[in-house]
Length: 359
Length: 134
Image 1 (cartoon, rainbow over the protein chains, first blue to last red):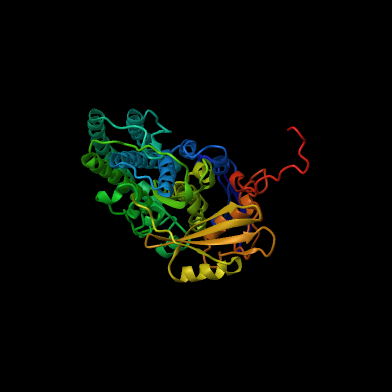
Image 2 (image 1 turned 45 degrees about the vertical axis):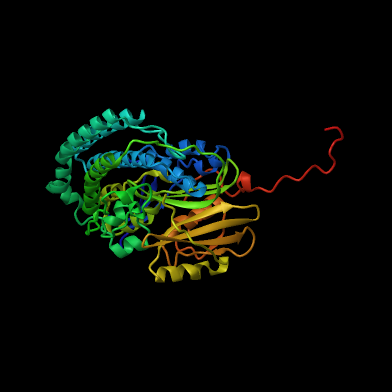
């Protein structure tokens, strides 16, 4: 055994947009152990449920994250609606699924840019984010917001999408889908990308399950698990199957997200084709009494919303288990016996969202 | 409207590691561990998933008494949740495979979620000698 050195990685680091800390224990250039710690920006939002009523908490939930904000709001509302046995109108569900899939496209394009930046492909980073701007424009046109949509509420949707806007949305999405091939083909076919991602940070299917991996992390190791298959909202009405890769390396995780971008385009088209005119929400009265664990598929994987109501306007407990939190043990596992130079790429391929984790 | 069937069973604190070992052997995935601070105990819920079916185990861990056995021997992934229980709630655990000893969450305030939630706190006792006329 050679001499060991500890390299502190984060909380401030060029490849980390948000703060997580890893103590990397090295023997020469090999990482032999990674020790994580979090809490640098912990906000205590779960306890805000004591001060904000159940309707205000929908706004708080969206603010857990600036990337998957909509699905946070949707997860919270889904949990409350299950406790209160509220039937959201069909059109309300379709609108939620459209915004949810638009969020996935925006999140995966943002992640693609960060990964490209992480391995030094600056042009690919800029092109990924240029395309992301176009999906943000569409989100703004349909919700009024680019980061916080404010469109999900207990009982349905706060906004509708008019027919002419929907037609324009589908046209622009078709154009964006075509243009996305320019970057995704590079991610999938470029030899320099493959050199940095193929065979790097491999996690076997059994390890991924045992270590609690979720989302693209899990599916890239050959496990077909996607919370959309649970049947929340109206996903059972759509033609959908989890996207799976088998190699379990950084390249496979990239491939899952690339393919999910196109799957989301398809799901939006399916929603638009199935949507019928009608109400988008129902009136909600009373307070929740009971508990429920809502499970949704965010861009980074399964999110859990636990709510426990006691008949008052404030929840007795509001708890969020985010996908990044679940993906920390697999990350620690992947960082063993790898070169120091590969650490940034491996960290980025879990698509870490520390703001979510520090709810 | 889709509502998942979410069975909830009660498990004695001393038996939770054994319960988790049986779940692991049965091919269940650890989904999460959550905690609610009650006045004199911690209400913990361990969630497991198999083929999209969720199973919850509820443990009421008294604030005083024997430490709660860790499940990390069966589910190593439980180290994040159990260190969270220690750091945020002050739940005492034994047998943690990766024990950060309060340093997993780098917080200024120690165990900030240990106090019972406002809605679960017992009602305040009336004053012993209320002032006449007030």
